[in-house]
Image 1 (cartoon, rainbow, N blue to C red):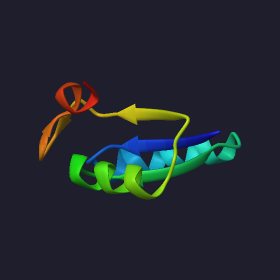
Image 2: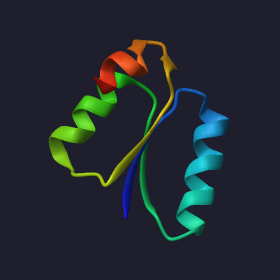
Image 3: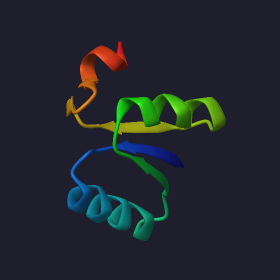
Length: 64
């Protein structure tokens, strides 16, 4: 399963990505909604783990 992790706090993002990869998930991690949009243009994901409060916007607005 391929996941997109959208989290701007670097330490948390790295810890989550490492834990998920150890469980067998493929993880792409980005720190902004702009980067998430770019990731979706070049790849397909089965699920998204989304921070709601990002420096470039609200995660819930992006999700809608």
